[in-house]
Length: 618
Image (tube, rainbow, N blue to C red; front, side, top):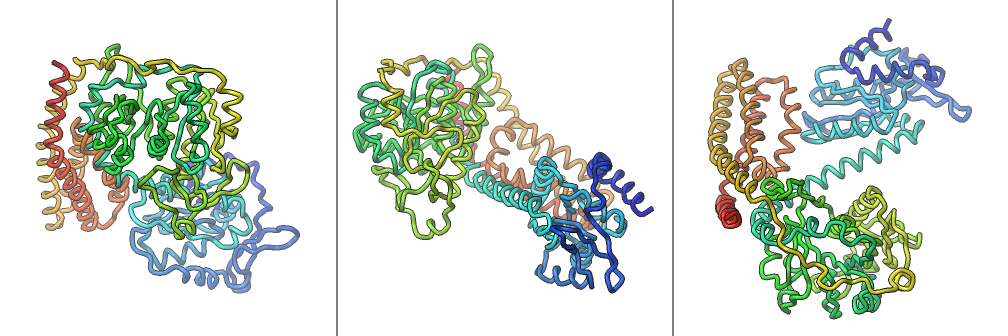
């Protein structure tokens, strides 16, 4: 009867888990988990492993054992999200929730037979269900990944993992897979939030200021897509191993054996050795990116074309003496709003990535180059070196950085020390190589990190075997200014002006509504406040759909926007009406205060951009 009641609860509330259990009914090994009475009258579970009985809970006093486990956790704040890994008979869960009744919690069990044993012996009705977010049977990677994504998305504050100790010892493979996924996804969320927070304003400011350059320079992807099919290209990065390949790179350039694209700081090493690449690529949105091209500007070098991502630090483009070509980046919501090709086709974009080398890899693939030959792509330290010579702003790797470093496989199969940033770049490069059909990438970087999907061949051997004849075409980059659809730009500009004016009215309505909610909460008129939440949701949707907010303000405020959007479920689940109202008012007001500051901050830039658009469409 107990099992049937629990199964019905799962079916009604936790349908996915019920569905999985139902699909596994005939394959469950019901003899895997055994139930036994303890000396004090409680129950425990045991399994047989290598001829020995292993108890999931104490065979004497499982409740005292659970109390000891819970004592390991210090003060837990309300609204903390707890993931209970391993259910057993739930003694630790019951005691934890008794001590911390206000946490939101999930129960995750990777072993179907273990969950079945719980459902057969304990009632789900005994669990405090107001804060139980889900019961998950994570017996496959897809379910686990979806579950963790959901937890991370919905979590406002801290997330802690409470593990059933013996469970993870008895089923180590399941625990290891879960643990790695959990740590990686938490780390990715923090890193992505950190990146978004650091760059969110600059991406949009740069795109607005650079828009004039975009309108008045060729789009390299439109002009040259597929034009270099089968032509070899060298992608030169500023890793330490570039130093020993300089003469090989010089030989390739002087004899026209391959096109040479420098990425990031490598331009300085090449100039240091009087080698001018066929193009220099850049996309870093920070103000410091201008340092990379300071020497080119100082020397007035006009013979190195720059290919820039449209959201690159705008200071980089000011005063650049050579020709410029652009590629639209995925972070540039401005160009993506205003531009359309004259023939009506969509604008090709490059996806943002942790490294300009990864962005340039996308570009070279779209242009048809093959093979793509990596030089100086260490993605790791060489001793205390992080860059090749000539990168005047580089510094040695510190002892602290060495201690925090991580070991990865190098091109020879040995280990090499790297950091999280370089490692992320490597993983991104591997992702694109895996997903680009027919791409041929040769890695010539001696002592660099191994890049999956590439073959390691020393550069001298590549020259001898692949680069045997001149392939460079004179004036290879010549082309007219890209013809974007002027009528479309004009229409989009007029639409944006209307949305800009409307944005102020929407903000006024939004603030007025928040003040009303605040007043209702203070007067304890909670029913009327609930009606106002519905109105707030409607006005928030109008803001999300407003072109000015959507193109400029929300992307500039993307971190806070994401946090607010992800927290809405949590806010709606708050049971205390006073706390709910205050949290809603506080969260939504802080968000709009930032939006208002950004609107005021970009007013002059928007006006100048609008003026540049009018000049272009005349």
